[in-house]
Length: 95
Image (cartoon, rainbow, N blue to C red; front, side, top):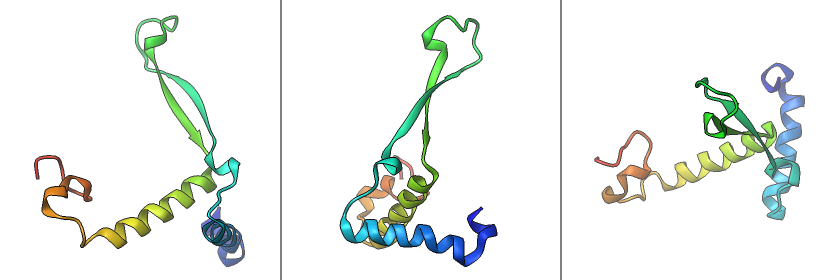
């Protein structure tokens, strides 16, 4: 929807994100998640261990989170030591 809406529609979340960034506050609706049990497809639906929880998050909250994560990764990309390789994209615990 953001892609199809063009600049006018994209400017609304941008304004919200700038306001959040400057005020150091995030609206509650961007932080809340609804936890839903998802059936794993095992034998019985009556047993609770045959379900796993998933979080349904706000799309606006996920977008804001991804922007912050990208900024942190870009800022720290060349500042992480080799011994911290597992925290870099594409690296595992054994690298």
